[in-house]
Image (cartoon, rainbow, N blue to C red; front, side):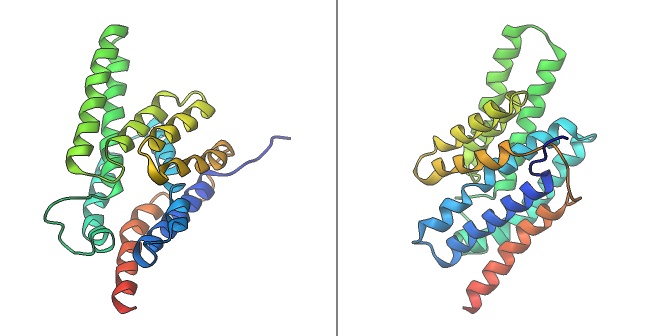
Length: 224
């Protein structure tokens, strides 16, 4: 009898709940770090499934469009909660879907180089350039997790054939941001329990939930 662990849909829902807890803390309890600590679990799980999605999607262009559209739709609700204003005229902080978009484009370009050439020197040189551009773009746009987020996506993609190294590598990359980010290592256990099952079909759940939960939090904050 095969041993069952945690399905993909369960992990995604778990990550969504921890993200919600994080943003409740940001909105209503900014001085209480426990909410933020719990929230550090979410991003490594989303990064993991982004790399999984990259490997298994039949239409990478559609994946990119989906990330881009929802990143755009999420920006104003994100500003309301994170920046406490509708328009962030200084562009100080952009939402995490933009980080994921840049990360996806980075590993896509990296994958193309690896597939089209067997020359290791060429692969390495182009790979360093591509990853550097992806990281600089995230830093320049000031996206959530910035260059560390893009690098974590790259690390999880390159180490995808070894689950333990993949998960530890991605989490440690994020941890080097410092402060509370080391608590992202809490995501290692649930990710290692992932058994490869898809679970419930909730492909678009997170995409819609992301901007909507910001709107709800902003609404509650305005009332209370």
